[in-house]
Length: 116
Image: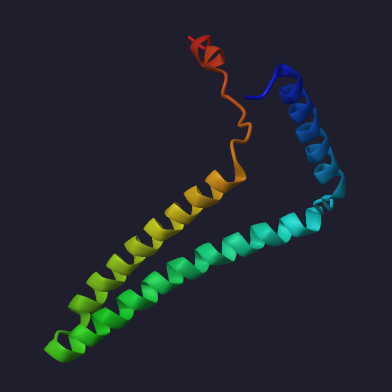
């Protein structure tokens, strides 16, 4: 069993270790953050275009096989678009969860009520 003195020493040691780690971390540059945001934007664009292209390929293939040219092409392009948007939204949620809770400005509700 650990005593209160040992717990206090361990807490102090953990604080010193955390301070030492923070001192040795490289500072984050704004340029790196801008590159990260651009990378995320391109990822979302690629996901949307990939969904469209896969839908186009499946639709064109089915239309060629069955001889009904625009029907499956249009349906699967729309389905690919929907799948791409769904994937984009899930990526956006994932990135938002990774970035952590950020302060968002709350809209003043009282100002809307006073207009009456």
